Structure formats: structure tokens, C-alpha cells
Image (cartoon, rainbow over all chains, first blue to last red; front, side, top):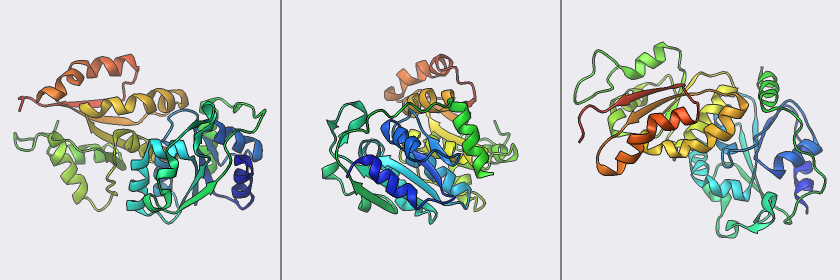
Length: 155
Length: 140
């Protein structure tokens, strides 16, 4: 399965969930699959998608989905432990694992050595092929616009 | 700083001073200089206590809380400030998010000294001015 198909599968079931997507191609593929104000495209600060999701989930009763990659989850593996400690009932952490840093050219990660589901809380691991969907545009919004529309969607 | 501060507890009362200013979501990484502050946080059942694993994790959680309408505060010791360079420069500044940082400025022992020397300059270099520094008065 390609990563964009995994993202499509996750988003098919999404209704009013707040979605935080990690930096790089996962954000760009999410934008192509289904752009909506409830999506926050975290461009930069790799590893911070789960912490942001934790902070949002602690501060609202809305369901929160984090779309992470294996490289980003490994970069902040400690945040998975915090997530497990807090065990927030409204947080789902998808780790889309292609075993590579795909956004930077498919360099290998060490994801095969880690059982993300046992480290984190409510982790849904989806294994996908390496590589990126061709022709996905950069997110066209200014960062402050992305933030404002996401915050507006929380209400 | 609080009028109730003592040598044993230099940050006594500081936690409730921040709460009185409207901070309603507090997360950070411990420092011995802030242990009084942290003890007051732990004792406060009104706000959650989150054992963050690193400063960038704490700041990321605070940004999420900010997005959902909270007024967050992140505490850390200066030694951990390096972990915030990435989220400040690639998340907070570009997205226009500002989270107040409470930084305990540690001078000694020796491993603290280089960051002690550059902490204020580093904040200036990042053009991030939303912070409070509490500085230990006597090196340990």
C-alpha cells in the first residue's frame, strides 16, 4: 500500500476530528486527500505533531488524530511515553511506517527496531511502501492562516 | 519574584503568581532551582501535571493547548534551552504562536556555564522575548 492510500483510508472515516499532520510529505498528501479547516499542517518542528496533539486533546473534548511518520515518531520517541502516561481517551496516534525518511529521499530509519504500539498510547501502526506521491503541491496557505483556520475550527 | 522567596525555596509563590496572571496550562522539564515552583504545581489539583520528557515535548504540548484556547506556560532550566531552538524557529515564530517561557538560569556547576553565558543572547538572536528568567544568586 502507498502512504497516500493509508491517509485516504484514515480520512474516509473522519467526521469532526481535529487532525494534526507531521511535517513533510504526510502533510502534503493529507492536503491532497482531504483539505479541511480541522487539519493542522505542521510544516517544520519534526517530532512535535504528537506533543501538539496531546496539548489539543487535553484542552478540548473533541477527538484528536495525529498523523505521524516513523521518522518523526522516532525523533520524539519520548513524547510517545508521555502520551502513554497520560492515556488521553480522545487521542489517536497514527504512525504511518514506511521505514524511511521519505520526504528527504528514502533514507532508512530504525523503525523496524521499535514497537510503536507498546511505547505509545492508542497507536495505530500502518505499514506502507517507501516513496512519495508525485506532484503533491506545497501547502498553499500561509502558516498564520493555517493556524487561524485550525483554531477557528475548534471554536 | 515573590516576596515569600527564601534561600531554600527561591521560587516560592511564583507558581501562584503566574496562575494569577491567567496562565492555565503549565508544563515543563524540572530544575532544582524551580523545585518549589514545581511542588506548588504538583499540589494544585486544578491544573494537570504532565511529566514531559524533554523541553521540545513540553513546548509542543503547550502549543497544542494554546491552539485550543489555553494560556500556557513552559518552564525549563537554561541547560535545556537548546532543545527549544527548533520548535521556536520552525513552529512558534513562523506560525505566530507565542508561549511564555519560565527559564531558570543556571550558572554552576561547570556544565551549565556555556549556556548561562549565551542564554539571553540566544533569546535575542531568535527574537523571542516572551520569557521570564529567574537566576540563581549563589553558585552551588
